[in-house]
Length: 229
Image (cartoon, rainbow, N blue to C red; front, top):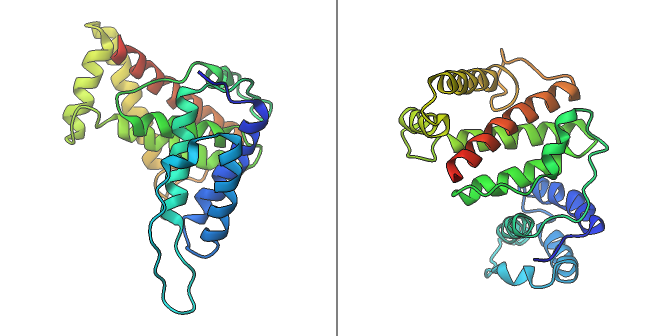
C-alpha cells in the first residue's frame, strides 16, 4: 500500500474542484485535461492509464469535449485515495470537533459510488471556502440518498431492511436509527442541500454546514460498519 503524501493531497484538494467546475462546459476542458494528465502521471504514477481518451469531433468554432476524460480522472483519483491512505491530513479549516472522523481509515461499502462520494466530500469539507463546504454537504447528502437504495430501488423497502440489519435486533436502536433517518431526510428537503427552489431554507453558517455534515457522516459510517460485520 502506497501512502499519499500531504503535498499531493493538498494538490488534489485544488484540482478536484477545478474538475467539478469544468464539467458544466466543454470550453477549457481540453486544456485542463492535458494539464492534469501530465501532472498526475508524475504525482500518482500509473493513474492516468485508467482513463480512456476517446476520439473527438466538434462543430466548427467549438472546442473538443474532454469532460468524459476529466470525469474518469476524478473517479480514478478518488478510487486511488480509497485504497491508499493519506500520510498526513490537515483539518485546520474545520471548527467542528467531529473532524477526527475524517482521519479514520476509509470506509468500504459494497457500493463503490458511496466510497468515492465519501472521499470526495472530505476534500471539500476541509476547505476554508464556504462554497466548497456547501459542495461537501451536498455530496455527503447524495451519499445518504444512495445508501437508502443499497438493498434495492424501492427506497422505502431498502431503508427498512437497512435499519433492521444495523439495529442488530435491538428495538431501541431501531427506533433511534429510524428517527435519525427521518430527521435527516426532512432536513435535506427543508434546507438548501438537495433542493434550491423558493421556500427552502438557506444555510448561512459554515458551523451549521459542518454540524450537518458530521451528523450525517456519523450515520453513514455507522451503517457501513454494521453492514460489514
